[in-house]
Amino acid sequence: MEQADPQGELEELADEMVAPGLAQQVEVQPVAVVFAQTPAHAMGANLLNYMTKEGHQLYHDACAPLVDKFDREPTKLKLFLLHIKDEATQYAWMPMLTHLVNNCPCNLCDHYGEST
Image (tube, rainbow, N blue to C red; front, top):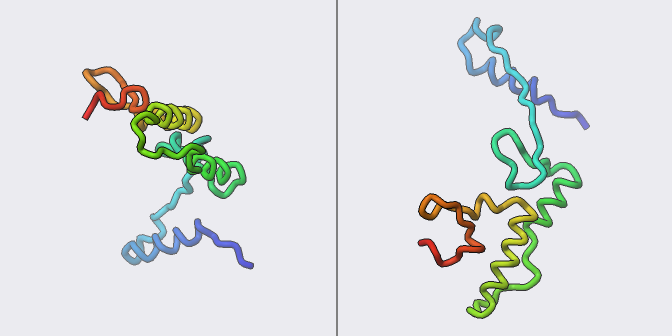
């Protein structure tokens, strides 16, 4: 099985995209990839490597449904939000669940119903 050469493919594409005679001036730089420990930390150049066993398992665990499903009973809402908060803390989702209310950061798990 022949292994792909992404650098060679990029150079060929660059050659096709420039005017004749200018192809020698095009230089394609390889991109360094930095991996993150959680999907929520994958910002900018920090990517989760799904090709590794650890990256795949982390993604699978982070996407798994909660053990206790929310049955829409008002009396169980606080328990459901507590489970969400635990998951958000474990998988670094809390920044996605945090917003400003009167210039104070509030996460949706602790301050549910205080903002619209």
